[in-house]
Image 1 (tube, helix red, strand yellow):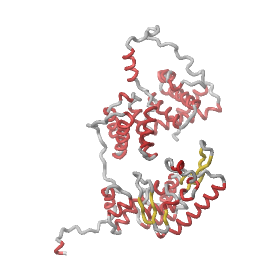
Image 2: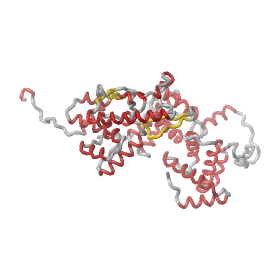
Image 3: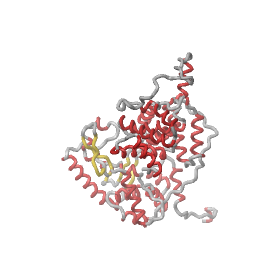
Image 4: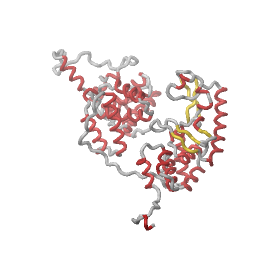
Length: 461
């Protein structure tokens, strides 16, 4: 969390004293200020700009903050604007519709009841109501709540992953902030062009980041706005550089494994031994491992594709021992009135007892149970990805390996070591689950070439 500068903290504390805010609530006011500053820094918004307030309030709504908490946050931002921006910020904030709530009757008492013109007389009702409606559409701070709801529905009906939803929603929020919450009816491809150029020129984002933003806005136009995206000519695109994956040696793999504790060590062995993505490994259930056939099945991998990979024979005993511990944990959960695991889609409605069956249990269960408030019961999720990522970072830091190692590095190493052992590139493609062999060809740059460079006729060989 971002810390408040000492000078600003002193001014803020002085404002709290002048406003006669009870001292026991000072910590909550400071907390909201830190949240607001951290939010603006995270989403590249100006703290001193009123346009940063709407996306911040929407974030509070997403976090299920109560109306009273949202009101307190707005009061804190009003004090902050009073410190840095002067009266025009506070005046604009006092008439902001999101700040009016029933729990605080004192708020907004000084708001004028009538709209007055510059002469001080009540403003006349405009004659051209159509023109007034058109001008209202052009004002900023338009609500995009219906568009966000439609975005969620369109992504879920296509069975996209939760990470895709999170990424697309984040880009739409940033785009809305960039356009100053312009009415969706007035959004055009020119706004997209300006935003993508802004990302490339001002923010200097990578090509992959800019492409992700482009895809998110393309989805927004087609499936949410119901508009044709058209051609986005003249946009400055970030130049994509060739990416060579980081690959570890077998010795480095063994050293890292020595510094990992169960179950993270077994997770890493599957990442390297089977070439799995991290979410594919953590999503494994008990029925995914067939010890008799020596096969591991990946269900609903990237792109909702299934594939099978051979189980490493050197870790079969470790996997069976871990499965025994999973069965023991499952039995203890059942004895405590366990509600079962989370199942995909509507599978639970079809098979009522499936959540409690051993075959559907996670192979890497979470450390703690999750309480489902709606159902009033405890359920278990799989091991969270951050636990594995933190364990890998700590192990690499301890070993002193001078490489950028992440959970995906072990998948890169899997492909590179197989290629180095003269396995066919098409076989490696199938094991990795790549749709295009060109994606797999990148690993030809990670191993030393042993082919002959001199041109020669096969008759002379």
